[in-house]
Image 1 (spheres, helix red, strand yellow):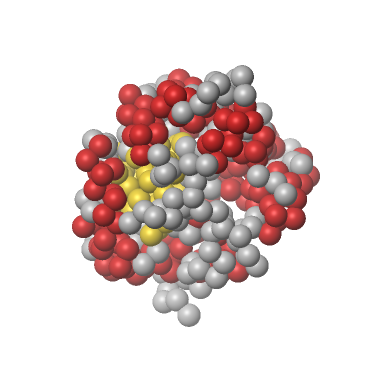
Image 2: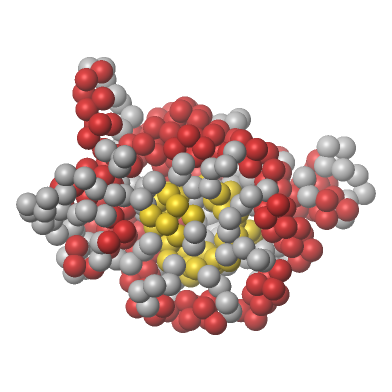
Length: 384
């Protein structure tokens, strides 16, 4: 049976109780009230003047949908499949690190929500719970693993091997964070959660990393955290280095952080199976191109069949559909689910996901679409 956004909407009306947490903005405001200001700033903030944050949102505003009437679409399909991974909605949960600063349950709560909703989760290599712990919490639910390419290749190889052994179905290597961007909110608070051992679980549970230490992380967490941080930056990497990783990863391999046609072409030449068009949630380069604008350029370069995902600025069901129409095979949902986690742990994440699924389906119904994956550029007006 296909998902029905109307059923979700009607359940709220029938319950007859105030429902204050509906939109992404609602969840963000509630999370702001609940979280320590430094933790909230780390989650919500961007690079520099945060112009890229505004650009991501503005790119969606500049692309209005073009609804079509009397389409006979009483049943619809919002599911997608990317590189063999199926999602009941046209989005996946983006890789976001140090979720323990949002809620003590961190990635485990998100994993359980993903298990219940069947929305695929991309686990961050900067997580507060290990690859194996999250896999156990997810059961057979679909999942990918995101890799920050540390300057110790043996650690990278170990992470990828552990992910494959734990049932992760793809590796997503992030290209845009070889060093941290200039983040004023975090700098004002002198806040870097890794210094307190947050977001270190993949490293602290890794046999290769632990072999680099004189004492195990449990015995000397500060030294372990400092050693982890020393594996960054890694600005010496070049496109030719991807061949090393490609040779060691049998799973589908994607790169995340591509924003130009030139880099998209290089990724394909390197044997990469898919691309996530992303400006890292506006956290790296102040004034960078909006992810949705870059998506159009990248899709023109790689052609219609190459797997493309996009993240950055997705807040509503109409945003999801606009991204699909602009060329994405799926989108990544980021901060909104973290705000749900902060407010309500697993239940909060499930609520954010369910609401976005419902809004996406209802918007698809109202614009006259039948299957979200079939939308193309004809469904959005030209960017102004």
